[in-house]
Length: 389
Image (cartoon, rainbow, N blue to C red):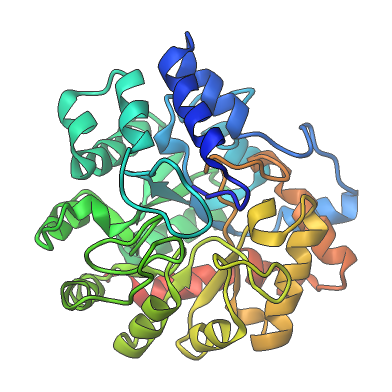
């Protein structure tokens, strides 16, 4: 979920008011805020289609579990569901789990108060414990994904281990249309101050761990927070514990100090699941060159988004410009895709429109092998190095 750079107090209050006053408010909010710049259907050349259909696309971040949609049914709004993932040729989708959004929200100086997600859970009539507990919200969304997997007739499979990952790759190489699903927490505030709650999330299937979201927490500082501190002592212990259990550390939204602290602490590859780079879109949210280089030295990857607040533009060419910048700085092997679909942002396309990104990459001079690396193979490499066996 993305904070908007021009997100004023009045808009925050307006969104909250929409949730409070509108009949059918959750669907209206979902369809209004998870929009696309270019509406489907999307068409590309035959040559692009040949390249695109050979990809094993891994999207490092999307938030459909937050919304009251059936993941298995195709919808005319929002960005992600199983039919649209299949049409867009996604091989593995990382599902972000959002548990808290402050109001008001801005690019910086957010405080953890007046939680918009509490209202969203209330208007979805979720169980009381989910309304009152961020940990329970995380577990509820994990359960929601598992129920979709169970009902998918083997079209979705949960990725917990390297063995799961290799099975997914093998099945897809045989022509089976199965899509991998991985759970990712967006912010350690969901642990509710108790490091031991990591075990509950691990048992529920979480394998990627975003340390922060839109505000600082008691374990790490956010790029959008007030203090923007780094890892606390509790946070250092938590990161080490997570890595020992084969969880991938996600530095999206992290403060500069948090990025520095994590890179100095871990020897496994890290990811930035979704965002942009200051070299093409200079905001506090995006990565400075020194952090891109540090992540590359760590063996990690940078997931580039397809939305304005990551790229400072609303076209696939803007995303390609950010990708080209990272490639020129640290090489092809450290670029990945992180759409932020369904993250309360307007993305260029929905999940069926990823061929337009392939077309834009080809037009910019990238070769099919380079595109295969950036659109999925780099992420698969990192997952093979970090997931438990």
